View 1: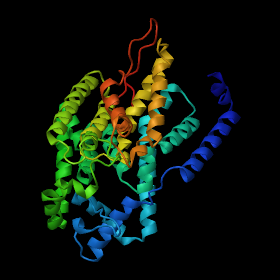
View 2 (view 1 turned 180 degrees about the vertical axis):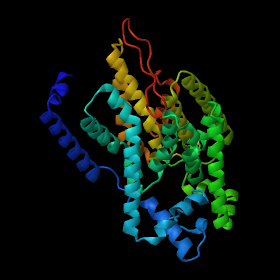
View 3 (view 1 turned 90 degrees about the vertical axis):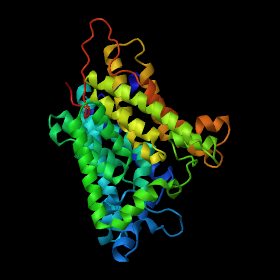
View 4 (view 1 turned 30 degrees about the vertical axis):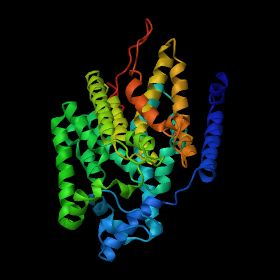
Length: 410
């Protein structure tokens, strides 16, 4: 393991490694992964264009040649309405630009403190981390589909940042807006409640409610259609048993494609929520708000009826917490210090591998139960058995530094 350190020991070596990594990443992204042709931003664009220019109804629109339509709450359509004012290529460019900005903010907030603590050269470390981030399958798919996932994560972690920097009176607005755009982030309101941030939870709820009311005033029919019909019609988003659905419901639907048991799903979801509530409260009592936010992202993916692969960007905070824990153990000289980095690297490789798609056409059988649900098992494992932030220290080791939700040290 000495040769990688020698390779980056000099300025020239770091530059050569950085250039090689960027070129390799760019070539891989351009040639290897499936390209989604901005399918989802096409749905958004077509929906708002039909709604604004042709008087169409939001939840009646179906993208030509498919059976997919708009599935988000009405406020999402209101937020996306400006796309109707620009040509299609500009709409795609806006989607990419917003995801790039959200990615930069998330890496700064989540990975930045780790880089600072380790005293790595920022430009080189962010280059490496940025390439690893770009190779992550959910990130690749978010950009390729033109999805809103990274924007939602950034909104939620804006509140985490506010809590971390002593501006908690404003925290909750980001979570509320994210919830009004897509319901999955609503679990973060629950997180604020169970960790005693009642004021922030109330602000998040009020923000989500106000945004929803604005959408209802703009288009009452669309709001009525969503809350009484579209929300409950899971067929609108695709088959629950489709291999891309990496949620607990997806696992059950693949086991019983015709009649997945809602009672079993509810029992599993409640068990996961109980573990999440317990572990989140423990983390916050230990001053580790960062882990609490990460656990909430994992849990939201597990209990949501539909968690497509590109939704798994919510795993990024948990993976960074795990990587930070691995680096701390290396620094502190734990006996098993090399085990966790290998585990972390292995999980990352699997999550970049698109392995679940091997069972795209047939997700039955024992091999499919393991492989087709691989991302579910990783998410569940991170929730259940993620090591504590510091673990036992050898005699004489320096005290571990506690970090909060946005990575700020305490």
